Length: 457
Image (cartoon, rainbow, N blue to C red; front, top):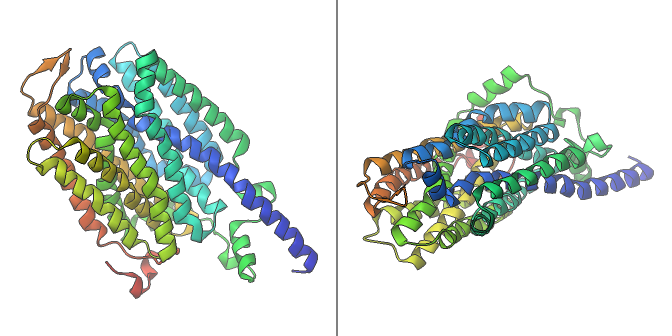
C-alpha cells in the first residue's frame, strides 16, 4: 500500500470509527425498548389481576406469552440477522413491537391482551441477536466483550424506565395510556433504525473491521481471513453439533430465567404483598436490579477483555444470584428491607455473568454464523423465563390460602418461598454447568480446536 493509499485508508478508517457509534446507538436504543417490555408487567401486575380477574397462574401466563414467542424466534432471529441483516430485522421487529404495545393498551379483554403481548414478544425477539450480529461487523474482536456490556447498559435503561418512572407515569395517566406512550417511542425507534443503521461498514464505502484490524497490525488481509458465507443447513449443523452449545444453552436458561422471574413478574408483587410497600416503593427495588445489570454489563466485559479470559468474570458474577436466591428461600422470617435491596442488586449484577455466556457463544462458533449461534443460546435464556415465570405462578396458586384483597389474590411468605425455591434450583444447576464451559482466551476459536490450556474451570 503506497503512501497515498495509506492516507486514504486512514481517512476512511476514521469515518468508520465515528459512524459505528451512531449505528450502535440507534440499535442500543431499540434494545432498551426490549427491556421495557420485558419487565413492565411487574409494575402493573395488581391492576391487570383486578381488571382481567386473574390469579397468579393466569398472570404468569400473560407475562410468559412474551417469552414463549421470544424463545421460539431466537434461531429464526439468527437466520434473519445472518441473511437479511440487522437493519431490516430490527426495523420490522421494533415496529411490530410498537403495534403490539398499542394493542395491549387498547385491549378490552384478556384475549386481546394476550394477542398484544404475543405481537410485542414477536417484534422484540429479533432485536438482541441482530444487535450482536451488528457488533461483529462494526467493532474489533478485542472490543466485543466491552461493547456487549455497554449494549446491556443502554438496554437496561429500558428496565429502569419500566420500574419507578413507569410507576409514576401509571399513577398519573393510567397503565393503558402509559403503554401507548411506549408504543409511540417504539415506532420512532423503528424509523430511526431504517434511516441511520447499515449492516456493514462496506455498505457505506468504508473498510471492513477485518481490513481495519489487518491495517492496524501492519499485515495484509488474506482471502482466507475474509468471512466465508456458510449455507444454512451446514450452519445449523455446525451450531447444533458444537458440544459446548448445549452447556451455553442450559447456563443461559438458568440465569436469565431466574432474573426474569424476579424482575419481570414476581418481585414487585412479593414486595407489595409481603412487605406492604406501595407500587412506587416496590418498583424501586426492581430499579436496583436494573442498576446492578447496568454496572455488571460493561464491568464484566471490561474485566474479561482486560484479562483476555472469560470464565473468571463469568463465574464471579454468576455467583451473586446464587447467593441472592438462597437468601430469598432460606432466610428465617421476613428479610430486612435493607438486605433485600442488596439481594435485588445481586440479582441484577448476575447479568454480567449471563452476558459473558453470550460472548462465549460468539467466540466458540465461526464469525459467519455468529447470529445463528447467539440465537440458539439465547433460545435457552428465554426458554428459562418462559418456563419459570408461569411455574412460580402455579406454585403460588397451589399454596394459596384463599385470601383476596381488592379482587386480587394475596399470597403468603411461605407461598413465595416455595415459588422461589424452583428458581434457586435452576440457578444452582446453571452455575454447576457454567463450571464446565471452556475458556476461549477472549478470541474466536473453533469449539473442536480449543487449545488444551484454554479448557479450564
